[in-house]
Length: 419
Image 1 (spheres, rainbow, N blue to C red):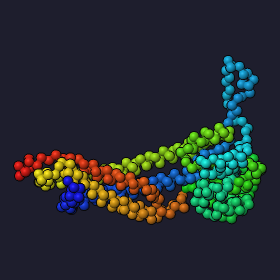
Image 2: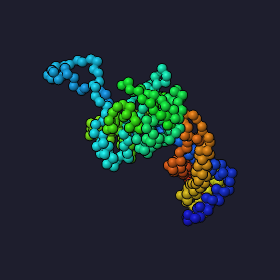
Image 3: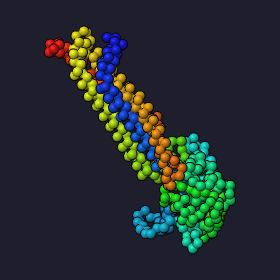
Image 4: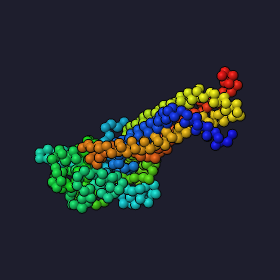
């Protein structure tokens, strides 16, 4: 039979039960809207929570770690392979944390097309001096421009201008909780003491707030030049090279490669933050599981409605088959009904899902721990809408396929004889 004729029959059957059709379409609408809203909101939260740490973590960190000398003097004095050496309480060597020839390493990394950028850093432990009390802390000497470009540094500066540490000599951006402990305000001058006992004064030009209390209690930021001056080191003194990649998935393999090439210790972001990735993955799985369950429930609603329609339309099906319609034609009609319901419900669900996501995105979310976040986070990734639409069509198809098989096997003679 002509497809146009079969579709006309499908439309007639569809609108003959308007209430049931509307209920089935609303079921699909609700399933897809809930799927999109749930995934958008949950993954928005994932991005926010992971970003609190991952945005401030380089894809690869290159540094010199303190470690014991691989070959102890005893082993060199008695190199006989048949001799066993038992050495206890081996201490780290007095190696320098400085990365030598760092300018050449930075130049080589920047020429690697897999690398987005390289940010050098000087990190040192200090004591913040508050009267007779010393508070332990860490000062990170950074290149502000690269930190802002690669690690969204400005998003975490809740007071002052981040660029000031590169413009104002002997200045510092204090961790927010550290500043509260010292009761320091913008423009105040604080004293810090390095591990070697050198005391210096620094002007507070901003506050850093990541939302992680343990981090904000100790971490502060200054320019590389200021940090080198605190340590009494030359301008070439660098302790870390922070590397960001085009593809973060390459971090573990490239960390091994760079460690071998440059003779440095390397730590990739997956290893450094494995617990955050695990938590994010689990939350995403839960979101997808709940969303897909909603879509399956909507599919069962279509299935039940079509089953009832077939039961009520046995006479119509018998007449169709008696007048020359084949079982395949009848199957096409009922699958078309299911797909039309799925199409209407899916399109409406996509629109409602976007509107609900936008509504959540406008709800105020104010917390002292995250000053830069003003509303609840929502992820509008296109893949959620594509997955929702495809799954809506698939559930609608299978919800119509099984009842349509039943309708295609109806024996017209038995039905008409029974009447």
